[in-house]
Length: 376
Image 1 (tube, rainbow, N blue to C red):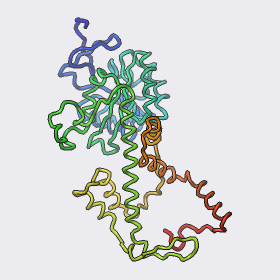
Image 2: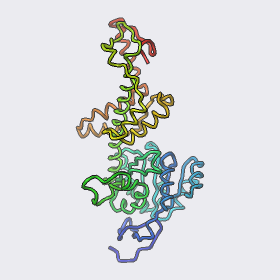
Image 3: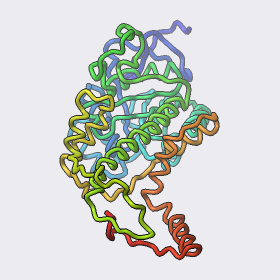
Image 4: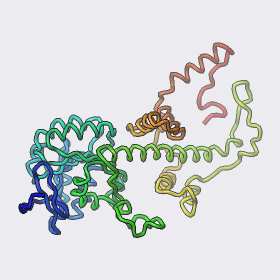
């Protein structure tokens, strides 16, 4: 290691010294407060910037919608009118965090990377495909830049609760960024320690984890979201069964196109779903934060009139299924949850029409209209 003293610079350093692209960084106690540029000030990016500012870090925000920048400036953050302006306000080695939809990350990197200098760090905190992380890390390394992928979970509640962070990248770079991750994470008070882990080393109990090399952070977040798909689908399907527990009380046509309900007396329950969600929150094996949110929704809007039932997917479920195929790992629950989202958007309408057409062709079965007798 070069014995020369290291120059201090805002937002840099480690415990000890390391060499990165010819730049020597040292962390001292006064340098634990860091500087970061946040690119993308939507639902997540803006609140993450706010949380960093509240923790004493310096944050400069940029968004194509300048009203989002002005709103953040009013709360004590810095603002930039353009990417070049943001870069000019950051001390080297710069840290630029992208909080953008996966589809526009490459375009943003094409604009941003020429403005950066060797040793600067780019973090992608959106839901990018981990294959893209591996490629981007290689491309940026050729410019002397460091790339870190961070899967972020916490949604719109993260400002107060903190964000669960799954991190991929070079170990020393991740360690350099530790004060940022620690400020964003929920901290150990969010959950009691797992028995046997009370005195374990590492950051997992704080709510953030260096999962491995480039791509590992988004790989873990991808599977996290696949699990989320399955959990949400299970809750939705279960509550749907409860919602239809009164089907024996509903008129049901007696014709060749309707399966008879053998024992209508078995389905005479007019259940209060908001109360069921509430009681499940207390001592139940299936209690969770998702159930907490479901209980809030059912209390405010029991008939879900504010929702059409069109459920989007942003890619992680599809990628989880692809990876499972490559690994020969069966994931019927996650796969079914993904396909249910396709169906919710009408992607199976053609198939359903064709099924109806075939029934009409071979058996003369006429379609029954939705909302008719026995329908909902």
